[in-house]
Amino acid sequence: MSDPAPGLNSEQLGAYFALMEVSSLLQYAVDEHLRADGDLSYVQFQILARLVDAPEGRLRMTDLADGVVYSRSGLTYQAGLLDKRGLITRSPSPDDERSVMVTVTDAGRELIARVLPGHVDRVRQLLFEPMTGKDLAALSTVLGRVRDHMRATPPRSAKPRAGRNRAG
Amino acid sequence: MSDPAPGLNSEQLGAYFALMEVSSLLQYAVDEHLRADGDLSYVQFQILARLVDAPEGRLRMTDLADGVVYSRSGLTYQAGLLDKRGLITRSPSPDDERSVMVTVTDAGRELIARVLPGHVDRVRQLLFEPMTGKDLAALSTVLGRVRDHMRATPPRSAKPRAGRNRAG
DNA sequence: GAACCGCACTTCGAATTCAAAGCAAGTAAG
DNA sequence: CTTACTTGCTTTGAATTCGAAGTGCGGTTC
Image 1: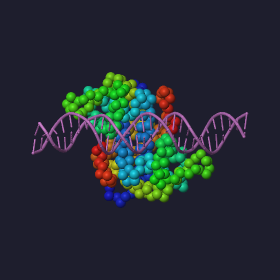
Image 2: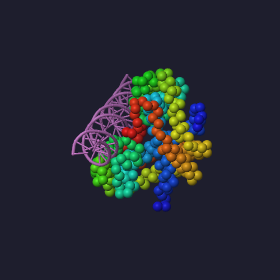
Image 3: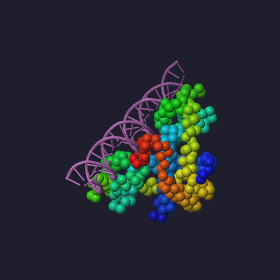
């Protein structure tokens, strides 16, 4: 860990490229499917899926934004689109007048229910089909550890340029 | 539920989410670093890096677009930005008057040389630091197999809907 | 209870991206 | 040579995204 500054070795480099390529291709394929099957972007799908999973099918905008890796303004835009399509509704929170509660409509639930099987199917076909049980276990272990590590690692703004922080 | 097309089991689901989150966070961190350290987007970095690696520091636009997962028009835009900054030059190909040869300038090489160590360092810190040798080997094996599988799997345009097909 | 600060969300402007259309150079057929 | 098709790239218009600024509510302090 206090190595001078060795580059990545060829195995690491290969793993890095493979990770980027795999996730990119997977993202692309899933995006394409959602668009074709339900006219949804991946972000919209995430928003709806998260709402369907939530206690009463509703969440505050902020909680939604924290779940999805997304800016507040971007979420407002996407929520506007989903609202226009009748897949969600937005109403002021009874608790805090500043907050906006987002709720999935029945149409939203139906759309997710209609799209989810194909989504899952695509993921299985692309990602898990070529994997053995051992592969899956190994991947889970490694990715789990890496994810925890990343979550725990501070963003570290490389160069204090214009006093910006990542607080959107 | 447990018939020909079962959903993903919880381990698979976890691996899928972990993969998406890890790649997203990694992408974000790397993007942020490149922006702060060299005022480059990841795509621009990829373009320059690919050119530096090329035989004489030059490639045709098409070859560049094939290497990067990118649309032709998007590449034109980015090449325009890099050209404006003096990091690349564009000139008609001697062989085929339709083609445009893109060449890295010395400034481009210097920028990549300046940015690369930090880039590699960030990747090592985020991705490889929490991994053991075994982890790395396992990850390489699995991702390599998955990547080959994905490359071999045809894009399959899920539903021939309203013409929204991909070809670029 | 008035002034103030912070939070939640939206609006606005700019940047980036793609698909479709357009243009120019090469290739094939008659 | 002319017509038609293909290829390589650029331009255009629309969509998506973010950061910064704006609006309004809630809690604090005096």
